[in-house]
Length: 254
Ligand SMILES: [Zn+2]
Image (cartoon, rainbow, N blue to C red):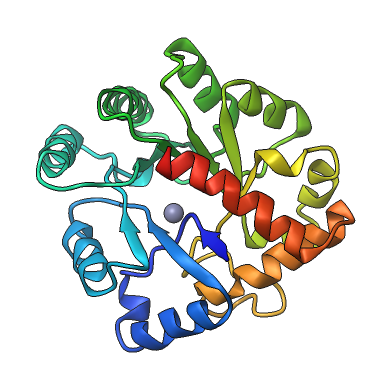
């Protein structure tokens, strides 16, 4: 069994064939699919998908940093309100993204701190998105560090030094399709990171692994990512499968 710790299968890209997408994931041994929230435009379609496939799909709740705009306080209230209504499996995805737009840096930091507090309050893991802001995100987490805090730096693409800081904070590294991209350099970083700190993710429909790069990503491709990691770590596919699944269970179920 492999676990896709991060996939947006509720987005319109999957509207027409979601049953087949989930069937293909099952046929490849991917039996748990964790759905990170984005913002109030998609919360209800995410929860609908979880209701349709209750044994496979598990919703998180949060506000994506790229959705932090003028109305972000209202968005955070919506997040808080959802948390009182049903079970969610994590807070996120949240974090800092300075790549697309730096207009709302202050608000992004506030939204992250707010969701970090929710993660402690509800004893749920924190799922972090960082782009051009890995060190800044690490700094925010460190400032508020608590033994109760745990989670994943999703789509990790940083240096060995950043990886070690993240591990020290008790977080896992989410590794996906980028590991198959030739010039990303992630393979060199992973050579120096123990499997016990890694969880697998697709980030579907984005970041499709080679050889499907350029097309829509889906959870069944997680197998390609696990195979690539096995070749980098010089171990068997089964070992990657076993250890990363144990890690994912530690994050979401303990
Ligand atoms: Zn995502």
